[in-house]
Length: 379
Image 1 (cartoon, rainbow, N blue to C red):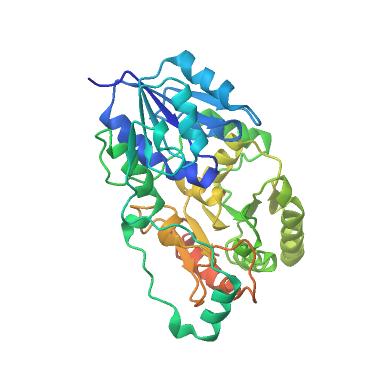
Image 2 (spheres, rainbow, N blue to C red):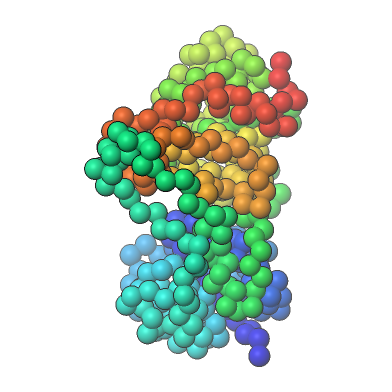
């Protein structure tokens, strides 16, 4: 008997949330008539608006207690819960919420709360942080670095697909997708006066919430943008959270100074949006860009999921595990370091940041100009 009401306990980070969308699509295909609800942290709840695989969203408010969340679940009388996070609390929420069938990965301290405690994906690779001594040893003796051990099935998209497989869903990956309504695009055009259809926008995302080890140097974002501005006449949107505002202001000022008098012709060439957008506005603005130059971050995944190509910069992390656009290998350009200590998965580099400094502004410009939407507008 197919369940009529399915609960998805969503993950807590933006990039991870986007990577669950192939599993959502496959679950919807397996249960086309079911009512599927996403239970998500309030900061991500709006991400799921207009998503074709979902019927509704339940919010977990910041600081909301376990029993309050369980009470919300119990009131809805779900028959099946799909638990994407690996945390004990997420499994306990659906257990206390009285959901009869509860599906998730087997982990210590939570197996008793699941009816279907799944063995891990055999290809799954945890993002273990290297110690400083490991980094030093690999740098001093680069021959010690093993070949890249990550098969395609190690990508985190497969981690979530394997969970819905337990409910009969297909595990073949599809591109991550986030839904957008036309009125949302029109609203941001009106709010920021983006009504010139001929304008080509390039997005810049110089921040990364995880830490400085994932951030390409700000001056290189600026240098790449200046070169692209002179070659194409494009304009720039700078994205980021409130905490990225000083970094975004630095990049914006450097671009404006670098373009000189060109910035005074008509509208400003740089639109600094860091800390000024809602999550839905961010989705719409990313969609209006022809390409987004970005660190490995939530906005990187979001840009690709709304259909905008990205040039992604990877150093301390691995595109094989968390790169965007899986099943669309030619949609994005992901620049990967050759540093022997990478990926280290550290928040802060313990040596000389060689992995991200390896990527030059010239390489990024060349990558952007290879994309069809940019190549045709070169001046």
